[in-house]
Each structure stands twice: as structure tokens, then as C-alpha cells.
Image (cartoon, rainbow, N blue to C red):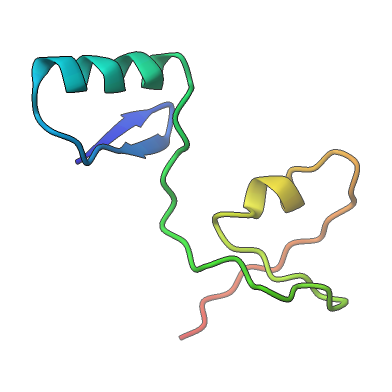
Length: 77
């Protein structure tokens, strides 16, 4: 089950008890949970001149204000 908050998705895989759902909701509202992305795994070796960006490392690479980034998006099929 996914919960959406400002475009981010958080996966819940616990028991459906009042205590467990309350704890999950409290952590989500406090922004203590890590969002879930549909993503390939981050490449183990990624030090080539062209860096591979996937959903799980997009923020740290593309949205880093200390870097100049040109992003090419394509569909591999």
C-alpha cells in the first residue's frame, strides 16, 4: 500500500493495526520516512565521463546546487 504526500510515495508493509498505522502516519507527517521510487539499482561503478542517473540517486546528482548538470532522458526500449 502506498501513501502519497506532495508527490512522494511511502510504502507501508506492516500490520494493519491501529498502533502500527498511527506510528507510520506520525513518521510520514514528521518526514522521517524514506520515499519509495520505482528505480533501477544505483550502478556500482559510476565514475565514467557520463554518469548514469536512476531514481534512487537523482536528487543527490541532478539537484545538487554545487554541480552543473545537463540531463538527457531517454527510454531504453
